[in-house]
Length: 225
Image (cartoon, rainbow, N blue to C red):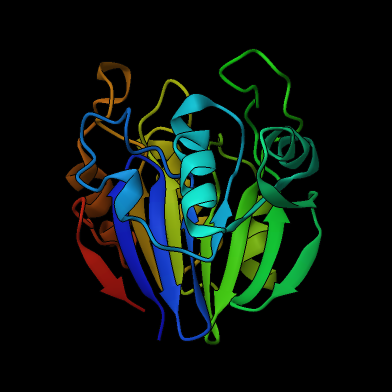
């Protein structure tokens, strides 16, 4: 049974019986994060895109743990140029890693590293570990193919950005939950900055009013799924 820990913003630690990954580890620059980069011990780092609040501490963590960075190819090339071990992928592609299977999905957003380097298309992730599937869509707006993603995959947990301005807001994220029909949805990408200061309990209430299951996972807390 995988264990999911919320690290803040869009960063999550996922631990399974065959390995562990951290997704979009924005910690040292995150005013709400409790964990420090040096406390993260993982086998792989998954990056959805190159923005600083997602690339975050990936290079530091990868070096310290001798972990492999998994990312869209252009972002993987960028990280390799910084000395990281990488595995480049692209939208629609999947690969079986020692810890489980990763498939890249589309995401409607941008991708540029903090130094201005263009880092290709952003992505979302379907991560299957120990027979359970987690959907992390990265930063994205609502798109109708989420319905197809939900139809083609039995999603146990979906992590949905709700902060608005840069991603989906609450209303669009509720529609995304409807499309995905996941076992449970968990909000992310909110309150880190003033521009995305929305109330996650409103999202949870609206999802549950639609007959679906939602859960607020406070920063630092974990969920076995």
